Length: 375
Image (cartoon, rainbow, N blue to C red):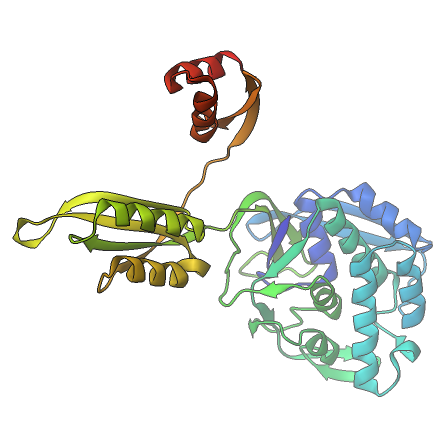
């Protein structure tokens, strides 16, 4: 499944978790994953709330131990028990970012604001929700970066927080309202999930939309809902673009045309055919068409020009639509005959009937009827 995130007012770990739960992730699956870490003294719930003009899901974490500090290595070891690669990668990324900022090894980082229950629950919970939803690709609209300052154990720091900026390397960002719009936890989860960022605001990847979720933040904004929007969809097949090569021919024999068509098909053309035409001065002619996969268009173009002696041709890019089909085999007179089934009917393969007609001496039409009767 594809997950597209629209960080309408920003992105935090709890907002992402709320959006994933709202889109259909199992709260029980999330709780089970967090329990595997060995964390104690916590309770995780989800509630429907109104934020601005929208209703959304907000996660609520209640803890008995409100300590917000832990060594990063301890959090990483606890997350590893849940067996969620996204959680492991997110916490490792936080440790590496904090270590680089403070000039210590990642394994020696002591997390202050990010060392509490909330960080572990948000990260492990989001990783579990992504797994429960079957998400394999994450796309995200450009992230709104807030402004101002935030007070930490290291003193007053600018917004976005330095750890957030370090974790957002390579991300697409835009200006946002005052305050902290993207948290280090949210940035780490996007980093760990390998998020791909659209070139413009709201650039949704092509997909079949399956579910939508809204995750609410804790702040109340005066003029808009404070939400992260999650859209879940299944991949759609990429368009099959091919090239049609066309050339008008009034001085080529039927034998040569047949030869060119055979050679083009043998060289990988998807199809080849002719249509009658009348050229200038009333001359009768044939238009040769070759349907070529894009990667073979150059080679087939040279083949057509060399074999026909034409001084030029036209190239058109088209989108090929192929309906699903499958084959079933029937036995007639000791020979296999393939029956091609499509959405709107079934027919025997001509080559199989022709081979059988040569063996039995029976007419093709009669053999075709017998093939249908044998289904």
